[in-house]
Length: 309
Image (cartoon, rainbow, N blue to C red):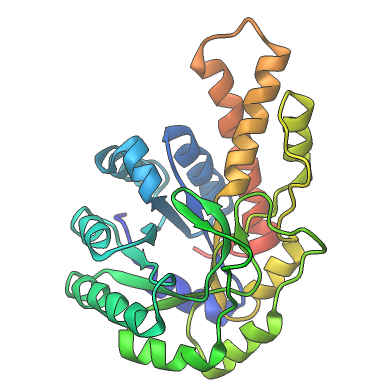
């Protein structure tokens, strides 16, 4: 099995009323936890890499780890660039073996977003790589992406047909109320399903993507706070809302913060219970297990993509 694109994954997901998990990776233990979970429940998988992850772990190390995971599990895995901000990083990832890239032109004007996205699409498609674009602007913080609540903007459904037609993108990330990070809502969580349904009406059979879709599971937040952390008010997207979105046009749901929380909670608890430990294998093993259990739950109860390979 080699690295695959998302084309067939999304086609099956759309027709089957489920979504594929796109999990951000930064190191070996995260990759192992995610892929072992997907292997056990027979789920297709997208491993995505941010610019920050490439800087931290280096492109070549992450690619070799992902190749090892494919050899170990036999899973169909797509490798995706998360939030590429310019043509150069998208090109580097395409040339470096990624099967999918996201060009995030949402900070630009509608016209400039189209021009940048089309530039990436033209190059990617010439290399057999698929492209995700974005309309609308999510609030929150992820790596070098920082958007205030005031600057966030819902996707305008009236723009989606022109954007897809002029750019040729293969999937589209939209803003319906999710946000990056662990502090997504000040009040009650609410997603604009009316926007999603209108986008689906205008783009029938076209794969939609949700970013900023971690649920910020209270168990992990409580564990962090009980072991020296300070995360009051952390609140994510309810899992039943994500499952509803997956039954509509959403074929890809991005999950990053929940992975970080699971890993951090496990490590904090381990050192609180075992302050004498200093071997990384002692605290990274339970962290890897925590990620594995989290991903299995997401695949089965949120995404609905178990037993789909």
